[in-house]
Image (tube, rainbow, N blue to C red; front, side, top):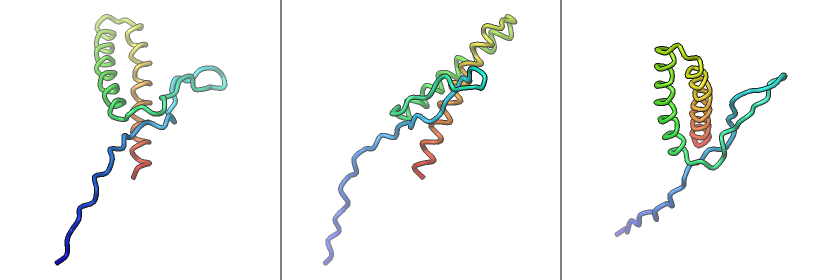
Length: 97
């Protein structure tokens, strides 16, 4: 008779950002002003992207209805941040495959 012994449970490994993605270029020649911080759990990064997208949607609607370029400008900055976070999450996930 063969006794089957299950593998011991694996410890939960938290997947975190690597801190590679940058955003908001300034200067001539352009240099990246900001970077996604390394060590942020990707679930937290996803949550922040979701929150940012809801704010962006609101700013775009208000900016369009009120013809307010400040709302639209703020939405543009937040879009760059949301894009950088999503790119960082995707880069992190792709390195694990």
